[in-house]
Image (cartoon, rainbow over all chains, first blue to last red; front, side, top):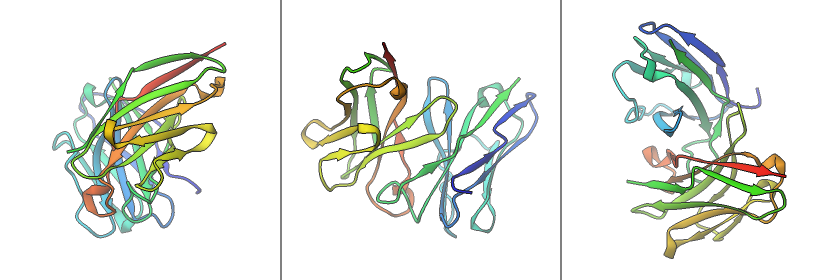
Length: 116
Length: 117
């Protein structure tokens, strides 16, 4: 596709269940980011993948959160034992090489997660 | 550490009026600065970015921003607001280096722009 693709677009889950969110970056983009957007909290960095380098996991809020990127392309963000405070929009983004500078970071439309 | 502060969570202007959205940054190294826009139920779209070239940066949809080092500011402006500009606007900063963790963006909390008739 032309842009960053995320699925599901909406997910309602019961507290305590595990959820998986998928991100398909723009073809050829080696850098991939996950952000969380909560009401009143702005955009919070979660994790960053760049090529074969070890990911930067410094933004993951707890050990219930994990992410992987298989084959340098698709990424999955997993939240175990979901809590109500996990309700948010989870945004994936990608860029050529490391972004945040001369390479524009492109965002997907997000996965809206509601924990009930 | 880097951070941005967006003054005003909500801004309301009349159609045709000047738009001014404020952003101040804090960075220990020369920053790269960005403005993103988010329309309802959509992802973020890059409006413009400053990457140490010209201090006055022009973006899409008639928006521009000026990097002022002395004021640590990167305010977003548009001479004449249009109804279609109603959205949420985010200022962001990165370290300005294309390596490793320097590349992640740190966002402000956003400013919601309302445009009235």
